[in-house]
Amino acid sequence: MSSKCAKPDPISLTREEIDQLLSRLEEALGADDFKIVKSIVTSYIELVGVLENRTISLERLRKLLAGVSSEKTAKIFDQEAAKKAKEAADQKKEPKQPRKGHGRNGANQYTGAERKKVPHEKLKRGDHCPHCNRGKLYGNIEPALWVRVVGQAPLGATVYEMERLRCNLCNKVQQAHQPPGIGDKKYDPSAGAMIALLKYGAGFPFNRLAQMQRNAGIPLPASVQFEIVAEAAEEIAPAYGALVNTAAQGDVVYNDDTKMLVLDLKKEAEEAEDEAEEGDPPLRKGTTTSGIVSTKDGRKIALYFTGRKHAGENLRELLAKRPPDLPPPIQMCDALAANMPADLATILSNCLAHGRRQFTDLTTNFPAECLVVLEHLAVVYKTDAEAAKLLLSPQDRLQLHKRHSAPAMAALKIWLDRQFHEKLVEPNSALGKAIKYMVSRWDRFTLFLRQPGAPIDNNLCERVLKKAILHRKNSLFYRSERGAHVGDLFMSLIHTAELSGVPAYHYLCALLSNVKAIKANPDQWMPWNYL
Image: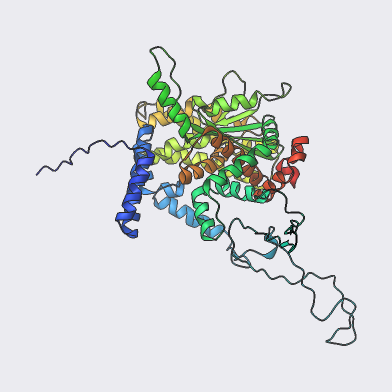
């Protein structure tokens, strides 16, 4: 019997065919067995998608399969020195006292809760004290607080039964009027805000919400949910437009891409490929969601754009709205050409975390060399964290980096150059390529040592893109360009509100309840003005 595994036949299934297959398996198998099979199938699909990318290294693939996500030096290197260093650092730290409440939230954190004042059942201000019978009671002290949390459906409903009376002679029916204040629409603005927040803020699919609402006795079909948010998106589009125009004036812009399937665009590209004649330019097949973060005066604006355009093309369209009298912004991105805005000037800075990752992927084969690089870069990240903790201005932050990070980066540059000059590393080896990647982009990696306000990495934009990734993991795709635009609009407003420290649900409710005011003056309805 041969020890070699038989070559499997290739399988080509669409997402709909896979879903149908899983549905049949769910009916045929028990719940426990189906859970295992579904996990195997989805893992296989994810693995195939990663391998099709063809840019993943074997080390990164190993970490992906093993579930290793951390890139911290102490967790990458399984060495006694790293353990001792961590133990020594832990000993220097003062013991942390447990916070009062042990993780529970205080009453003042329930900002969205209804508040009811409960008067004393017997006494009032000015009454004699029942304890001493001499003093008088006063009320300028804080009330005692008690929080009562109740369960409820995400969307509630009220059925108004207007009484109708019929005359026994003329048969004319007299009907009670609707109570004032309920409006003439079935769906309150708060319903659109809640659906948008669940779908585009928490990655809750329409069909899952429909099932939950059905179980709560308040049915809300998935198709109706989209109609509600699509209509809401049209109403608050001026606020989104003002957000885009404000983002174009930022001092620093971050941009990056993540994959996002749009079914109509995919179908259009496939049909165009079938009908194309020789010499016709191909229609771009891939679709992505671009994340762009713009910062100015401490404010952060998150924008999302889904379609065939890459992050650089979307950034170019955004910066085309920039007033011509403003200087070029600092642009933070990784080194992909797709992130560059063609023929528009920016002060380019590359993500140091991407340069660092070139070495974290090689720690198994080159532990000593990678440790040198990671230790020098650790100084930069520690200094930047200290600057953020102290809330330093851009100029003061630059001076702090010059005092602490500049010597570490200068020493690292000497070490990197020496590896090639003294032929200590084969240039075409994995380590050699990692060093080339770092050295060839050195000026872009070290812009934070010369330019006030320049970030050291693109982590802010990557965190923003997690909103789109969460949507992709739960809902898998957008059906149409219109659906993608609705998602982009709400994700932009929701995440910008979160970055501004504003409760996104209340912000969306305020927008949807003041549509006319937004059309008249959209600039006044930015999240920071809502505060």
